[in-house]
Image 1 (spheres, rainbow, N blue to C red):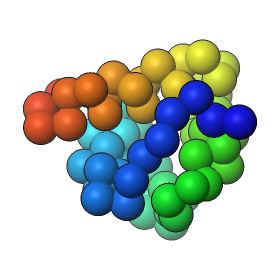
Image 2 (image 1 turned 30 degrees about the horizontal axis):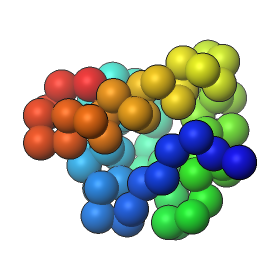
Image 3 (image 1 turned 120 degrees about the vertical axis):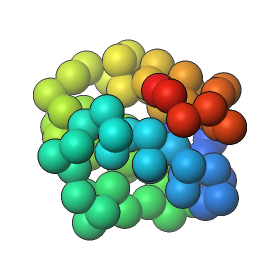
Image 4 (image 1 turned 90 degrees about the vertical axis):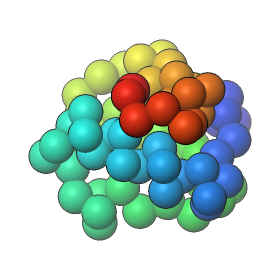
Length: 71
């Protein structure tokens, strides 16, 4: 079970932040449907070559500061 919940609306902002941090990621690689957080986390772990804790931390950080452009 995923440790976070991301709405489709919030994902649009979070996705921009993730793409700024990891500019090699494409829109296709960052496809997300609400409720599929587990799949997103697992995919990001492989794409950025980091562990689960780091990916979850990064996503949570992006959600907490949703109106800020920084990650």
